[in-house]
Length: 401
Image (tube, rainbow, N blue to C red; front, side, top):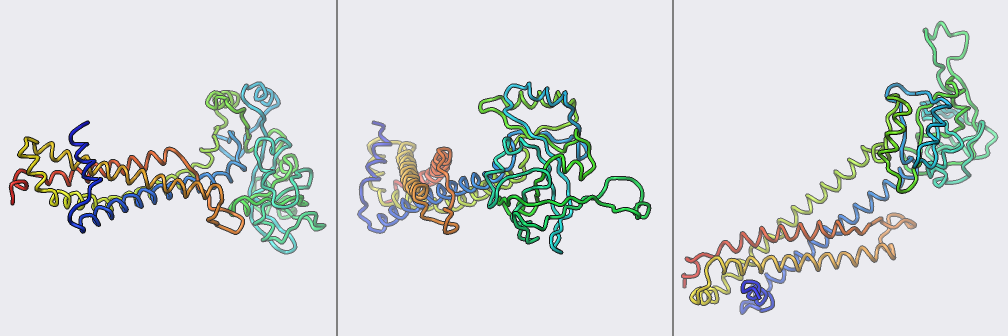
């Protein structure tokens, strides 16, 4: 067995004759355990929150979406539709047309977006799974709206009073030149269902039939603002994107779900990184205890060091003993901390004892990458602390009586 490792292991298991040194060593080990456990719990919590936040967009957004390169709309011809059907890897696709509109209902009003979708829309997204009450029915003059809009306007499903959708008429010239007729188109819409997903989206969208929305906005049947795609599991996304873009010859840009929500992903990743750095700073401060504890051990075992030195052990080898001891203490503390935190995370996943609301458990997620991150952080900081402390061993210190 390596001499430095053998002596370091003996020092860890043996008690000092000075009770204060034993207390300091115990506190150092405990701080390492708590620090590692706290870091792992926080990373697991943020992983759960990220998955929970993205679950909303996963229900609302498709695997791939084609958007116009410039302007609000682009055209899709019957030939292009047939070409899309021939692409291997596409399970289904759905067209949509979106525009900002003015909603009124019983003398209440609200600005929102109307999204005209075709019959395949709920096949390429899971939007029908987020219906809060009512059902997903999008047909001529029947639509679905967000619960935020419903609350603002006091709209209910199956009401005899329809929701009135107003959209400005496209055209040229001043309003005075068009004063003899209404400058907007109207669409009465009955509500079949109300969805609830996220506060901003709940106040943003009304779903209606694509053909009705095209008529409301005075667009022809080929004009859309986007095409949503669901791809077959295991299909090569990059190849499918390339084929879609080739069909439209530069008129569209294809984005995946992550790109559609790039701002949300950046925000979540930034928050995760900031939290990791803050807790790492706390660990750095806490692991100064390791430096102090090792120095106290060096002073307490000074006579042993002198004996070993007289037996022919070099200063470098003596330093290595305490360097290895510091790494063993921090690594063992980190491992125990991760095990303890894993038990807490596991109990939350199984029993959900920590609640956000009476019916919703706090989301956590157990990831092996977080185990690696915590242990790597603890070990790296432990190496630095051990190196600093062990460097205090000098020939002058050993020769001092």
